[in-house]
Amino acid sequence: MLECRDLAKTYRTERGPVDAVRGVSLTLPAGGFAAVIGRSGSGKSSLLAMIGGLSRPSVGAVLLEGQDIWALSDDALAGFRNRRIGFVLQAAGLLASLRLLDNVALPALLQRHEPAAQVYERAEGLLAAMGLAGYPDAYPGEISAGEQRRAAIARALINRPALLLADEPTADLDEVSEAEIMAALTRVNREAGTTLLLVTHALALAEAADQVIHIANGALAA
Ligand code: ADP
Ligand code: MG
Image (cartoon, rainbow, N blue to C red; front, side, top):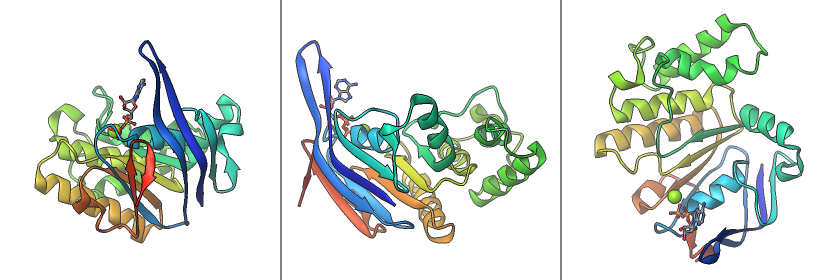
């Protein structure tokens, strides 16, 4: 489902090149759940950004459902990303001026592939599945950080992605919110069969994964 071949990322900085990711190869089967674990600065976010089509690898390839994503044109990659990949990042990234329901619906509305009523129905279902049934009309500023993060998961799922990428989605939250979000993510993986790649620096959060990938100094470690 997902295959990374010899991925590397070197950032050019004023202080010289920084090798953030060095020769990472991995495969993840459809419906699988992998956790990438490593210390801060080990290259986790850089790796995830290349897998998610957000940051071009310096070397190597990412194959998603057989598609070499970095061989696509910029437009084709943007479309592929919107249709097939869901992101949950450290900041929820909800639009403050939109209701939760509109935030969740937006990525599907932008595709213009289906009637808005159908999109909104699915958005309501996703909010409910994330424990936010009572909040479709709330604005992001009116709910807690944990609730915002769950709304961001609902938004990431609106286009029924094949792959859900989560980058330390609970790092800044209290333990209860963290447990709720981990439960929500594992449910999406088990029930909807969405392939899940979770980046974390907390070993406890990797426990539910069926594959644990350790990364140190940009390279896979035992
Ligand atoms: P992690 O997510 O594990 O904390 P990152 O992928 O964010 O690790 O960073 C890996 C290394 O790359 C770090 O040394 C970091 O300082 C560096 N780095 C990350 N992003 C950039 C960037 N845009 N420009 C230069 N260096 C970067
Ligand atoms: Mg990071």
